[in-house]
Image 1 (cartoon, rainbow, N blue to C red):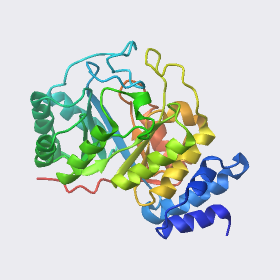
Image 2 (cartoon, rainbow, N blue to C red):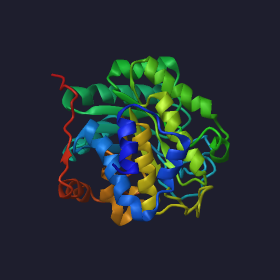
Image 3 (cartoon, one colour):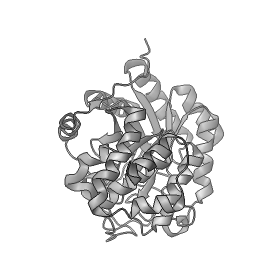
Image 4 (cartoon, rainbow, N blue to C red):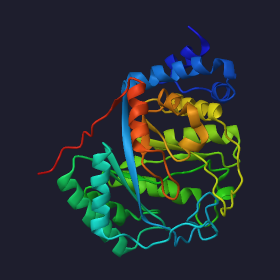
Length: 330
């Protein structure tokens, strides 16, 4: 058994990998990449077989954000030329769910910019969710910023299955990325969702001038948070943002990061998310050996690849799109 296979066996046995082992994954020689991917696939296959979960995102409110996140085109400091609009109406959000259903997405992600939702915005989202859950057999994920406990309870009562709030980076690197809220603010929101019995979704953005130790700390922090779903974004640096021009990633390193997240969080849904197309490029199919989930369609302010290409990629790998397991409401 090779060293990488031993690491897979260790992960499957529930034994946490050491710091040296984690660094060895990120520093894996390129000649060893296929062996590393094969080991990560052993873990992924054990828990998820060859199923791939599809998620679709809708940006229900763009811009007008008070936060200063350096990666975000919607932040108060961004000069990026993006479309800005207030919260969509209920019917537009429901129409997005129809599109997600057509794309075979098992999860529909309702996202809004801003520090946190206003009462009116929350009412719009919850009203839309109630109708969507009555009509479609799909999971609903909301991502509306920082939450208060009573807001999390309102989302749960409306039928929201999952709440996304990313930690984005390591606690040590957080203040380099944003100062308008704290790392603990983000952790608290995930905890509020969990206490409301909403499945927690939290992930990261890799490529924001963090160290490899930071990347390891991110993966361990998400294990500690017990996030059910972990979106791994790779920075797509947008002109006009504070991280404009950042270009630290290459496809091979991105694959090593995904393997690391699989070894540290073996049982969790790991989703290849924003920046997949521009950072993984022609190696995108290989990402589904450690990861078991992708977004289809566009992201918040950047375009994704055609959904037909995503479906073809899954089929060409011999994998299968996972149907939603949420019971349809009559």
